[in-house]
Length: 241
Image (tube, rainbow, N blue to C red; front, side, top):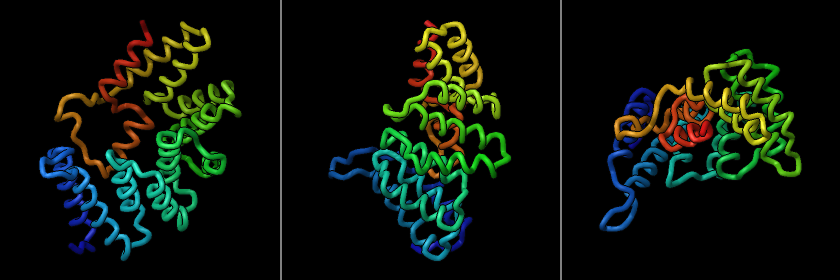
């Protein structure tokens, strides 16, 4: 199916996203119906991007498809993010998606990406984006065992909170650090701040259904933390025990 009209494509992607949440992961006849839906979405986006190679919105939607279980394909995500960075080297959303993916699927952020994140701090004025950038920088400061610097980690998280005090992840990571290092009163205060900023809890079927191609939902869960799973919420609450 050829779709060069962006609005029609977005509508079809949304329909397929709804279908993704409805189909099972396994079929009695073999195969994985949910993965087949992801393949359809990937195919539609790839065909569109052949004719529109600098449509950043669609590249980001494609990376969201690749990030969705059961795929979670790091190599493809990196390839598609680099397609954006070739024509827009300081695209903050692309760099943040890549940073989270490196952390989640590789366990650490590369030094090259860390340098790029530092550089975009100098050209970014949006405080919400700056807050997320400093959270990603904090991940780098704490992800490399040979480099791990708790002071720089703390300062990066404080900087993240300074730019936006309405998120969950920055407060939660700082609270965990304080509790780990014996600063219990400060740590629990940070956890309380994190819990107060939760805006949506994924738990019921209705709450868990969202457009898997929407990069905003990705940032809400993985950077801001304002949208959180019941499991993650319970883990935060247990830190107050």
